[in-house]
Image 1 (spheres, one colour):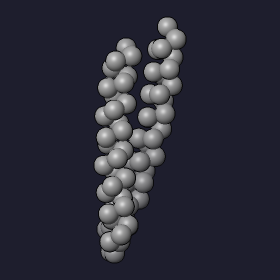
Image 2 (spheres, one colour):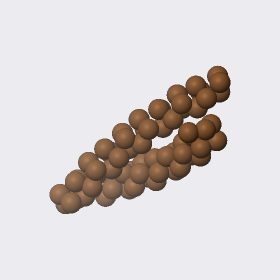
Image 3 (tube, helix red, strand yellow):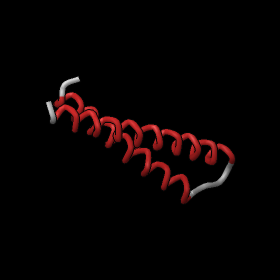
Image 4 (cartoon, helix red, strand yellow):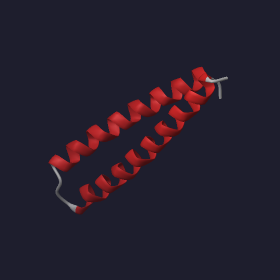
Amino acid sequence: MDRESLIARKQEVRRQLERAQASLVELENAAGPKQDRRRITQLQSQIERLMAEEFNLRLAIDQANRR
């Protein structure tokens, strides 16, 4: 992937991460039935995955800058 594509993907991941974090806060504030707790767990997993992807993209962007 070229640097511009990496940056575009990182921005998309960041938007997804922000949406997932907002949804998590909303659900945590209104936590109730098991279904909500299950969704909270799913959102937490999604957030962890997105954070890892964002980190890897940052590294790839940094490496692309050195070329």
